[in-house]
Length: 315
Image (cartoon, rainbow, N blue to C red; front, side, top):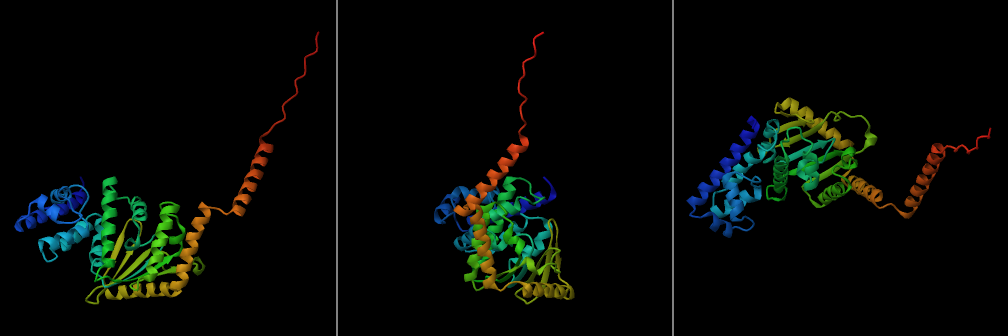
């Protein structure tokens, strides 16, 4: 086990020991607490306390806090559990993200983690170089979904997202997974705290092509920036440099389509997936004609006239 894996395991175990300590202090046995809490069996509670199985979710931590009357202690500790699921270089950003008041994001490759569906997240996270095994993949998926719970809470941040058009055109996870992901993006149209815009291909080259960018505003009105590539991220806290990145984001947003037109483009991308899966009768007829012509050409090129058998003359 490498140092990163050991660090992660130690935090999960610490969370479990804290749950056990608080449970015993409140006078509960595992089986009794499991019967008391909806959605958390005694078996699952035993896994959490031992630090085995899937890591606890934010919902688990909040439910335990409410039942054990901890004042939110476990939900606060859970932030450290989820941060250890991902590479160390991403942890400072994730800590800030968990309490940010506003988030401004520009992404060039994938939908941001806070807006990913489960299957889409699994397809994206499967590509990580730091991924250890399938169990680690599921831990990361659960952690990512747990981070999304904050979007539905009373302290939900304002989220402004600009996506390069490539994000909605690349069918990550396959057509079905991508279709559900696009539908999930469309649902944000009814959330007054979330804005999604598309930067179309027609904008050609631009200063944001180098990678993804996020500008966070904390509750004390401090701004930080975060840039990320395939296997590395950088947190920027210097006010002057953060200001430059904020201007870069504002320019990207200004060049992007308005929200309504962006939603129309997402719908068009969904329709494209549907047409590819269920072609119309005219499309099917054209495809069959093309295939027939190609087959005929291959048949002509590949055929050779067989020599006629001629009997040898008798001596």
